Image (cartoon, rainbow, N blue to C red; front, side, top):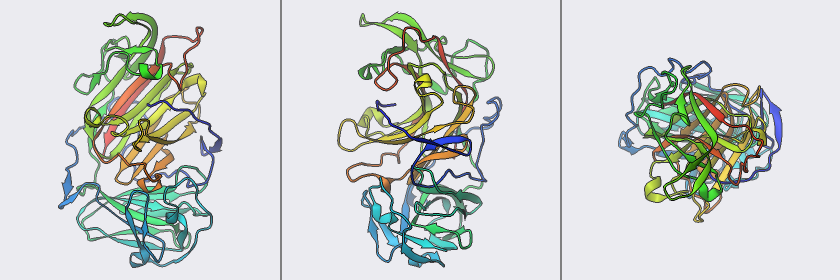
Length: 443
């Protein structure tokens, strides 16, 4: 939730408005592990807070291998080597890409494409859950991709989404990735180890906010961060641990409430707004992290559902990495929600990359599901199941570093003012409420 400014162009697509430009459209997985389209009550079920092991079959979690549609190897902006794909591709031919791709740190990945490919037979050195990342930024026709039981559709025309990711468990030494006959056009493909082989998804963290009205959030799941956090950015609130700022409403929701009220701090300063910032007690690596949230409509606040690296106290920000799954400025950007990554580049401010979407019916008019699919080598951000932003290490510029291979935790917060949201007008209505129906982390 770092400070930033944005200029955005939006276009309509399938019930969402998305950033305009060149790239793939959103991908819907037919084997999605969970949908939060219903009320949060009862969504949690059994929960195992055990994180994925650091190694599977003697390989470190996140181990990966990469291939490119080329007759020679390519070294990307992060120093990773991509092998020629001839040894793993079945069918198709390599030709110059149909169009050029801007805004990537490794343009050589997109200079050629293998058209008409029907399969890739990818060698995997151990049984496990593998993430397949298909780079298809220059595709001009839609096509389907299958890996194990996961199916994704590649569509064209959305900026910021150059890749699709599939999740497949296998005990074999070769993972087969199949494509629609004749339609596929692939620039590159990669596999990454995400955990032990498993046919089902496990819930690692979940809260459906059941409980009587007026109670605070479950202290076994959340801890409050208190005080004038964010004052360096001009934010005006002080965060408290009072149920008046973060409490259950008795209807299966958590209310995160910003209030216009004076509060004296221990150092003698006075803040004119109070709110809440909650950190999850659980930290883990990889999976799908999602929440159903209704953001407030008024201007002057920044409602957020996000993640920070758990090593923040040791390495600081932005070295720890930040994933902003949802940020909303209310009436300052009506209906618009943002998904953004922040990482290190050797400067104090780090790098950032993101996109925006407009959920159907408006972000403040109803609950919407906001999610991130966080896997080795790719992060995808979605609203209501539609991916509108995808990020990979290879697309970073030289000097920018990927900082998303270590454990992270979830945050829910509602800031007031700041360099991005701007100070609320005297006439802005308060209290303002961000309603959270459920939060769930599965992998």
